[in-house]
Image (tube, rainbow over all chains, first blue to last red; front, side):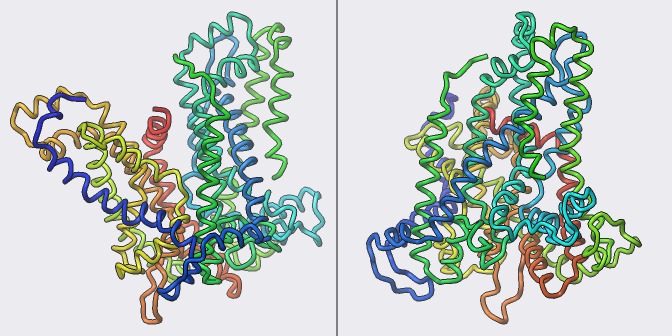
Length: 314
Length: 308
């Protein structure tokens, strides 16, 4: 850090620059998070200003809440599958884009048009979740007018009179949502992994080639270890996204704030919002928020610990 | 569609079979060709899976209701743009304007306050510096709606529910973690010599920031700016909780994402699907334009934000 910056009399300047950002951040971000903890121990309805302290009643009620437990289980399923599927696909495509086009002359290079693929793949990332919800709502339509059913009927795989009810099928609905998340996310992580792959010096690859490594070996023994930091970060991001899922579930599935059919696509966020805005159980909703917060933090720490490897410098 | 999910496993098996050590020995040229076809095949399939639904949806805005309910693969019978006009009248125009009004203030304010905090934290050592930095950055860890219940009442207490200024302040606050994180690493990389020279010339700290540091940080500011534009444009949960009319006489100030969902829910009993598709297409186009014009910066910005 620069010497001049350490001079005296800068307290006012520092405070002046930090004041407004900190004030906003404290008021609208940190303080609400803290309040969530406080309210979670009350029977506050959100309507009246008065409420009683009820201790851990909300938390013990949560443990017995079948709907919440189902939602928790769905979140955990998503938490495993969203990162795994997205990262595997993104890694596969990133490898193809960056090293798939190794020509006869040797050396490692991307396929032709790799720039084009990166642009197209990333595009879903700039679409809002609301657009995704409308788009995939149409794709998953239960009649022939849905893109998925339309194509399957055309191919003769599905009976025109009994199309698949994607989002109304208890066993399918969660996987349909998973697909939307993957469709949305792969491009982002492809670009991320591509950048990481490109920052690996070429001579490492060339050395591996000279030593007679095949493409699969090169990928597993050279590329993947060098990308490990990015994979780890991605797993945490995707895990946080899988804990959320609110927009997609609440807009695409049936029921008040989604979760249908019969709670089969319920996630914690939708249960929380229903209790807050529909049942008026604000204190109870806050307890759910706290449980989610704690779970998110535990999972981030576990992911970072479990995937920790020795950092490779290059 | 579900078969796509299985692709990586199958693909990995095929790849190691086709391009493993035994394939290597047969000579690079033919193997390279096979692999080229193979990788192009997979890449092209995914590219189609991305583009096809979007084009299909845009085409839907030219169809009639009956056509949309019929075969999904039918081509629109005529190319009239009625649905776009109807979507605009249904409020898409207003939602668009509301979103723009909010962002015209929220994005510059985010950039200004975020850079100020990041700059001080990056270049001025003082007690508590690290603490405040992590304090800012940690906000990115938690999903927004965890704080939603108290946030709603906080904004209500300020009497700013369903107001532009309320949403603007909340947007700025929630964009702070990412902006500070990104700009912090950017300001750290700027050379100190320029700063020292400015001090010797007698410039004040404030002046150095605005006249020396901000212009030097322009590439970083552009990257963060684009991310904030994308993030705030696509925000759904915050407006849907904070921008509801509070009384019957309260004007509707829905933002675009919120309005689209509203439109979608109305379709349940009105069945004017072309309008919905046209609305989504209208909402998609500006993002497509921003993305295509700035995709280089977006990809570069993404890289430097996450890999440093």
